[in-house]
Image 1 (cartoon, rainbow, N blue to C red):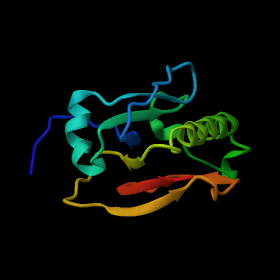
Image 2: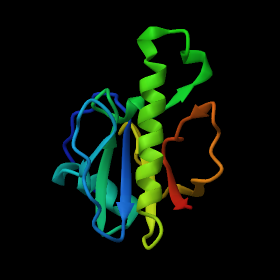
Image 3: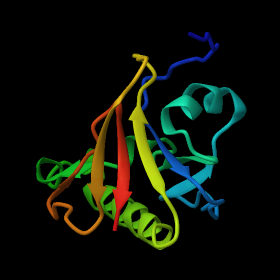
Image 4: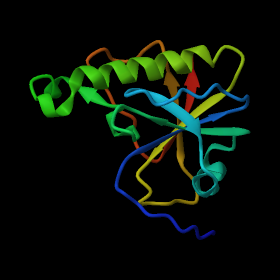
Length: 144
């Protein structure tokens, strides 16, 4: 077991594990990625077991905006269309990097840590059109 000091802001974090180095996407008011910071890396490297780990974000700055469903359409505070755009950009980014690479996803709010995590396939070709959300504390193996 290990202990890492981290301030939890209760935001959702989405991490991408990759066997190859990926291009970072700069924050420009929407979907973005960056290499995981060292203090975060210590908490997720044993989960993703990948050579490179990146953190994905949305227009909100964090990954909280990488989810949407139809109940958000009529609530302007939820920014449904921006959420959907960011999710589509996220999915496209994953598709661009899966052909010759192994990708994994992990979503957490850092309130619970386990010795091991369930794994599930994440098929990029069979995603629902009207909703998107990643379950927390599951390691997803990305499939195209």
